[in-house]
Length: 333
Image (cartoon, rainbow, N blue to C red; front, top):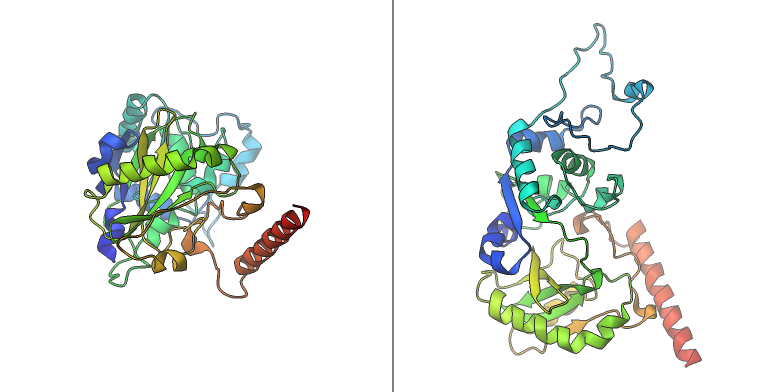
């Protein structure tokens, strides 16, 4: 339902969970910036920065390179050169927020972050210290097309393809976060029925040691801070467990649809009863149990997993390899 998808927008849920989340500052985006992100009719051009910030400070500035960015000639008369885009008001607000958040942020739209374009940044991460870096990541991302054009594709009551307004969420950057301490939680009928290790492509021995403690911490956090505050019956949410055992909510996502089930399948989760179910806490408990291929920056709706598709064949091959490794391990035991 559209209403359930809307509840998972960060500008909707963050005010309710601010005290148990990562510090975030949110700005409404002007429609002109949204159209800039959607525009693929011309060459790749970054906005002109009023602060003269360069999103690619290490690139070589060579006049010969400018040929790649020139406006092509029209048929007949030469095309009038267009002015590069500029968003001075938004840039000033973003600069102030970045300073307030300690000098570096993790940016995202209503639902999604530009994870697929991290490679283009100078750090290879989503860490941004300037408006230009944010614009570069957003303009280079295909993942954000989900928010911009396909946000309601899974809704039975879909009446539009995108929300009327988009928001830029700037989240405080923490360089020391450990990927093994992030978990996805599955809520069915307002009951926590499953928890999965978020990073499923790696075996972390520490999770085997702390599994029971982590299960207690996350279940208590859900009962104390989430269950009565989030209004949907069925949904997922991601959390991070810090070294001091504090739990922070990172994100909310709709049940099913485009949300990755990670170490579960949606068929398994759908079969779990809505009441009286024992929590199923899953981790990668051996090197053989690693799930290759699931660390993807492509939104779930972009994966063609129909029978015979390339992704379907890849998953089949990965499962066959996993079964082969398991048999070999058992035979050697």
